[in-house]
Amino acid sequence: MKQLVIWALILGGVGYGGAKFYLHHEVADTMDKAVLMMSPYADVEYDGVRSTMSGELTIEGIRVKVHDFRDELRIDRLGIDTPSFLSLLEISDFVTMQGKGVPDYFGFLVEGMHIPTDADYFDEIYQFNAQFRGANDPGDAAATCTGKFGFSPDALSALGYQEQVFSMAMSVRNTAGKFSIELDSRVDEMFDINANVTLAGDLMTEVYKGSASRPRLSDLTIDYTDRSLNDRVRKYCKQMGLSEEEIVTAQMDTFKFVGEMYGIEFDEYMLTPYLQFLNGKERITITAKPNSPIALSQIDLYKASDVPALLNLEARAY
Image 1 (cartoon, rainbow, N blue to C red):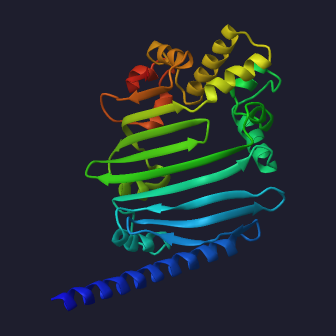
Image 2: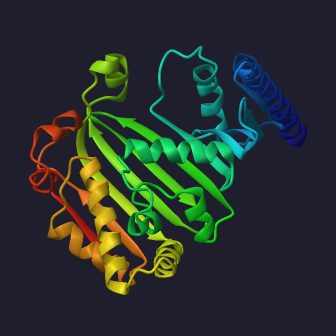
Image 3: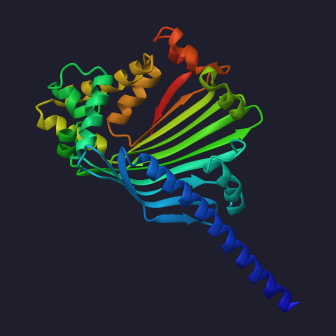
């Protein structure tokens, strides 16, 4: 009996090692092909492939240098997450573009994306984002120090950031009649965001619809935790000559502007908790629970002032 157990352990270890070798080989081969395809536009290097018994598969130590830009983008880990190593073997076909469909559960992760604030590509991203948001006065002190149109490289430096380190984990679950997307993200020493969205319908059905897909929102929760950004913004705004009252007004204006970008005019159930958040609370939670699932594509058909009631939108500061 003892020998049987020993042989079972040996065979299990050999089987696991072989499966792991095969998995890493397939993923590395796919990654190498992707690097080759990207070579006319960017130079990409990575340290290797790693997997765990818990079902995580990652590409380690990624370095990207886009042609025509001098600065490098570095990512510590980039990969997928599944319930177990066996699930990882099943999803490997999906990752290598050979799968038959999207599994009922899968996740993506990005850990340690390092973006120096003085990177030339970051300035390009900021300029594009500011233009997209309709920035019309780049010299507006209130908009600059509160990041109304995004934080410029100079503003981030003034806020005390030499680089932005971004991490994110996203998971998708597909069950009968609904599917949910959970997102955990953070920017070191800035903020954490946890978002959970539940949509009516079936994930695969929506995927097959392509551009005709009309996902319907059932439930939304966004949990935002400040990790020193608010305090840095207030100090920076003071340095730019704004009074305490002007700073709060500018921060509220920036928050309202974010709502306007999505066709929402925030009401008192959103603005009052956000003001409390600015006045010392560390965390704010925003929820949307419409009485019945509503197509996201139809929200812009309503008046912006009617959307909060339509979505049953409210917030709470802690």
